Image (cartoon, rainbow, N blue to C red; front, side, top):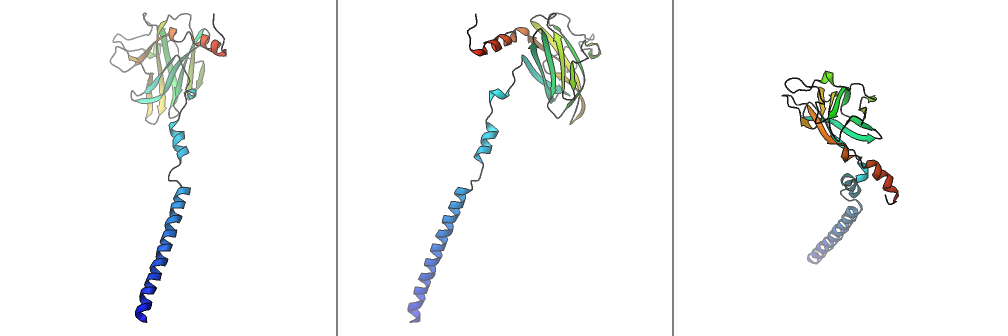
Length: 205
């Protein structure tokens, strides 16, 4: 009798273990379905951007600090009869003293040393129309500018690497330093007001 009961007992134990294992596997699969390993919505938010988030400017260039660090941007816009030049930091840097020189590219528009370096202390614009630690704005009349104009935007900035000299990124002056200037065209901006007027859907004549 003992020989008969032993196999039956073993078969009963195996059957119970198999049923329990299947139940655990089913519970685990159901749990995985309810709890995904990543948040798909978070990935979408990181990747998707829209063009409506970007402001359009006539000119936009980096504000370079110490030659190798992007401290912010310098932008140019037209407002009526004025050119608006704005220094903006990226938040990690603050903007201190600024100097700006602007004129027609085919003239001697910037004060230079004999070796071709800009004389910052003689730049004609040093009193901004608006100043905060993170934004500086100059408003300049368009009356004296031709279509092809150049400007040099200099700043003293403070950031993670300490105090640095900063320039609006562009072409280098002929001197041995890394000072830069921007060569631009007013004609790239002159249609902005017309475009705004025509956004209503009417046909321009």
